[in-house]
Image 1 (cartoon, one colour):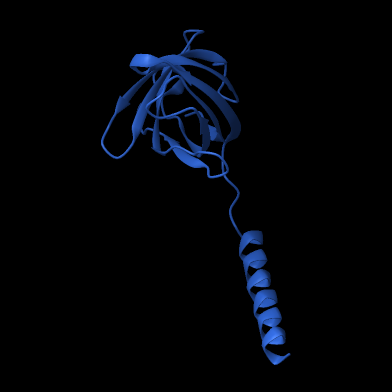
Image 2 (cartoon, one colour):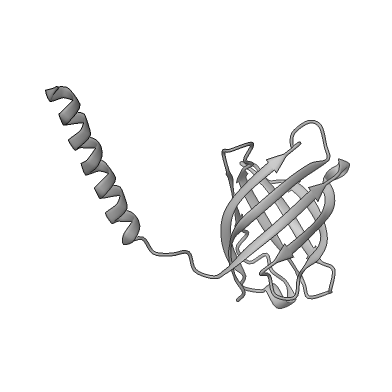
Length: 140
């Protein structure tokens, strides 16, 4: 009985500490954004997006950069381009991570920053690859 009580008290204290830390956490800055990527053989593909200015769709081009993948997104409306770095891809319930590559933006996307999570399906040796990104973007 004493052991159960101790574990209950410990779990309650840990939960309270976690909630207090979360309450004081700084919310992510920028505008919420989503990007849906579709890659084909050769590392090229297309994307659709929300929350990235006037850029709602365009083309992509992948390149490895040691320690991850760099994907350049070129907006179909001619407003510019920017690159994302993927430190890891998510699979299933485990999200991966992405971030805007510093100083990669052109035209309307100069000074762009942001980061978030990625969930992917069908990625790996068998292409095409589908990936859903969510996060926050700040335009210049």
